[in-house]
Length: 190
Image: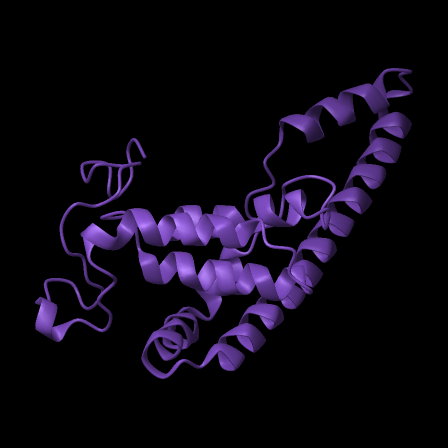
């Protein structure tokens, strides 16, 4: 949490004061959502953690529930979205759904930010779990397709560059050089 929003708000510690979500500078009364009181956080997080280990019939639905619950518990003063999103690939990996804990869900949530917040609010306000789970499953499905497309594009680019560099240099080390460059690249903006 160094150098980011929330770095001065006791990162990694449960909040000890009320927190609310709404337009910047709004009062508690004007908030869109008010999470549980700080005094209830330890027990809420204990229950949340226990649900992680439940043998649930559908791991993606379980993950959707866990994500929504974490966001509604809102255990930290700031930065709750980051661990909530990081939890997605970690859970999928632990559940055997991924071979590595890599799954980027943030792009979908950012793209549909208003609906994301609305769906979470409808869970807490109207108990609309069905609407949330449908939204979450669509997010996972569409983001998985986008992630797969991006990985395929990177692999194609890698093979293309290996051929090009080998043809240009006629070097036996061309493939190793391209492999090195691809390992060091972060592909931002790809």
